[in-house]
Image (tube, rainbow, N blue to C red):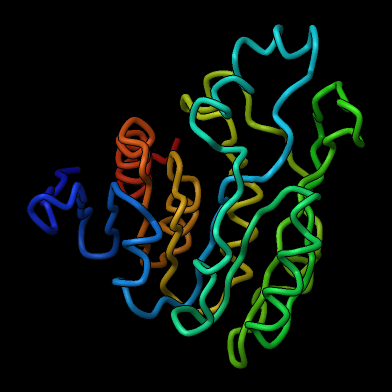
Length: 242
């Protein structure tokens, strides 16, 4: 697929790629770009978690730099909750670390009409605990305003989804890629026809949105991951999603 590439504002550092008439991808700062995009039916995001990134011992060494990459890319520093704005979206889905829930849930409860705490249960969790519980699951919160309640069949509306963690070549050079099965379920659950992912990574949300026939807007600040996302989503548009 041919990319249409443009610089939205000269000197802004924002590079935008358009794929067909239903996908727009921007490389830049989500906190600056997202407010300019206007209304989206759903914001679906996997923002930087807030957690202790030290420790791990011998297993960390055996992972060949996965946690080190998280630290290098500052993916353990958390995110500004203000990007979850009910004036800009009908619903939001946000992944988070267990330790972020105490602050995130009250913020969302005061912003959206209702919410549900959901979970991805990993079929192949990492064999470590690092002075915590074993990371055999990850939480995500689905919150919504009136008219944007969860969609899908009764089976789709389960609060849990079981899937294998993405490893090896399927990680696309990113340390925290979410499985297709998880993102496909989430996209089935969100109402409306437009989805934005302000922390796009390598484009898993975009691939799921394209497969579901929804318009997608993605934002990613890392140029390497952005390029990967462009190619993955273009492949999805051509019916050959990786």
